[in-house]
Amino acid sequence: MSPTLSLYTAATPNGHKISIMLEELGVPYTLHALQLGRGDQKQPDYVAKNPNARIPTLVDHEADDFTVFESGAILIYLAEKFGRFLPADPKGRSLVLQWLMFQMAGVGPMMGQAGVFFRYAEEKIPFAINRYQNEVRRLFGVLDTRLGASTYLAGDYSIADIATYPWVAGHAWVGVDVDDRPHLQRWLADIAQRPAVQRGMAIPPRGNPTDQIDAARSLLQR
Image (cartoon, rainbow, N blue to C red; front, side):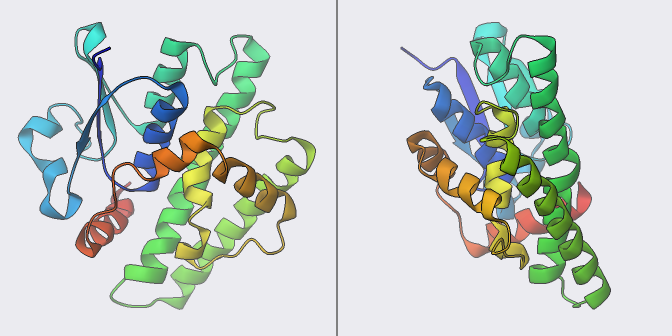
């Protein structure tokens, strides 16, 4: 079966959301690994696919090369296309989307900012570091409380978990531990054991340090 999907991505949490999803679905796809440090995401042919000049981007060749950008939108598109990881009933669907939006609006942006100021900012600004790390800790508390009442974020394993895991798994990168979050620790260990997650987290292979720094700095613009 030849691939009908093309994934343009890099080794970042937002990129790993989609590689995990595709691996969970078990569908063939063509991988296009972008080198962010080289500026691949800013080239005109790529910007024509993704006007935000970021990763990831999905192209569905089976649907007249329909293109989807923004990781949350890609997850929803794939879940609806293949009928998995997003319930069809209104309440179940809403619950998944609530936690997906929690990641998109909270966990991702706050962890991104925390990481930039903690790791890469040329000037270390204690106020900024503390402000974003503390907000990450608060968000982790929300997740921990939820996971104390539910095995996964929205009941069954869903795109909400797929979206959130790559970010929370990198908590040490932003200087925040999860030692006092037992339910979050359990969830992290559970998802980390899924073979599709392991494969997805390794796609594409991590680039050189310049790529990683460029990816981190790009979060300041999101």
